[in-house]
Length: 376
Ligand SMILES: *Cc1c(COP(=O)(O)O)cnc(C)c1O
Image (tube, rainbow, N blue to C red; front, side, top):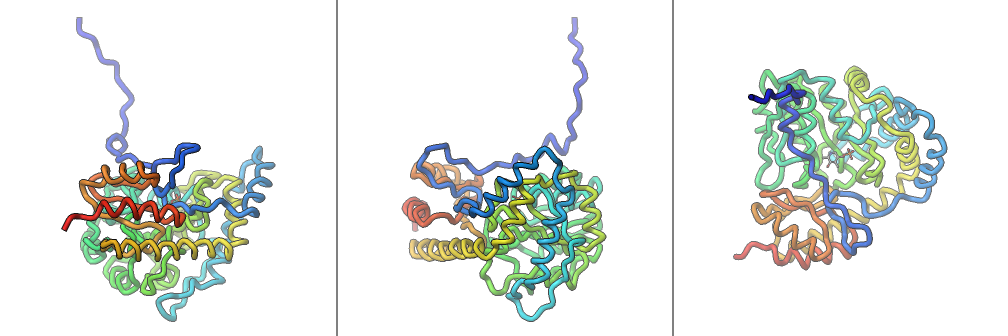
């Protein structure tokens, strides 16, 4: 007797082959370990933000504001008011209005909705690689085909090679500045040359998740560049500098027509009520939050200097993390760090990303990293 196989529900091939998003290891409760795996701010939320979250908890029997109106207005006002101290000269920034801002359940979700708004099955998305591990996943889920372009030896994006990878099938190019996990930013002259080459009907997404940590004066200014290019969209987040990773809220800044399309593809009520309230409260105390960012930047400077003294020549760290390109040794080296009490994020076969956290964590890491230096 032959057993007949019962038919099974097919899974989309693109989904069956998705790479897994590997979250950074979490510190076991009660364990004495520093968590430097996920580029989080090491400080708890400010009291006024906690109070806003607690207040909002009273209303969670109601759906949240579907389009996060108050938050979107606060973001637009903030972006319109402080023309991002233009690090790169006198440039007129794009005038942001609430119609240009779309909030979502973390900027990864926003990016997903951006892609869903413009991509049809089989369309190509050019992206740097190694870069943010969510990129190949959101591209494939949107039905697109990822076209990875290797990041240079020094951890910088190879924008000329990315421009050269654009074909008739390309609908989107992802640009990550600073690049996670390698660290350097895209410079204004590089982005200008790139945008001059990319056709106007190809969407360029500039992921500025770490923009608040950048101190490289040559960094490309996203808002200023948007004023000159209709095909540029910015993606930003409250997860990193604003310390709200656990609540999930990010946003895109886009031309109105594109923003409308992104709203159309967004999950209804995608930003929960606690997250909206916390993000609004965070913008109200932004000065204090940015002082903490300043502390992280100072710690990054100290960490990089000590690593340099130790003999490391690392890519320029402009986010709240540093990158060790340790290749095949990465997994074993990361295990050594864990044993020493610092959790780091290995990318098997490629390198280790270490977030900038408490000074004590840096000191512990330095002890471990001394043993990682290649023998000369
Ligand atoms: C952390 C990070 C984000 C933010 O993701 P959220 O979903 O907003 O938490 C986006 N892009 C990059 C490159 C990141 O590293």
